[in-house]
Figure (cartoon, helix red, strand yellow):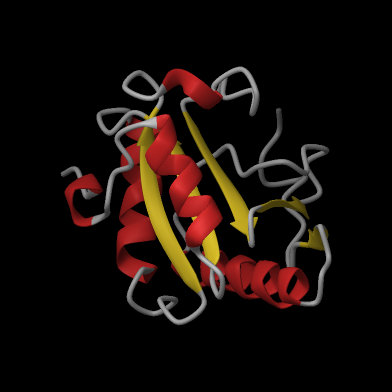
Amino acid sequence: RAMSYLLPHLKSGWHVDQAILTEEERVVVLRFGRDADETCMRMDETLASVADKVKNFAVLYLVDIDEVPDFNTMYELYDPCTVMFFFRNKHIMIDLGTGNNNKVNWAMDDKQEFIDILEVVYAGASKGRGLVVSPKDYSTKYKY
């Protein structure tokens, strides 16, 4: 069951830019992918279920990489589902232990784990850090 309808979609590159540019207080979480993709469906379920819990410090949006291909090359969106974090117009990187600090490129089914990551991103970003370290190491969980 697709949960993507519960979250706002950004329908153009301009809308994505505006979302990143205009949010001053909260982390902007962008999920790039396709609503019908199985990995995205799982991630969207997690995002939709935590959206209300994190609304004070994070805002979540979905971006369809076919409808809005503007960022596919720039952000190397080659995975079925990619989640990226921005704060005050700055891409916040997170060390997840996977070797890829730019993004989360798998479905996180554990809602509390995702909230923990968001809290770390928010805490670090609001102190001016461009790179934060995940509370959990995912290098063993996800073999690439």
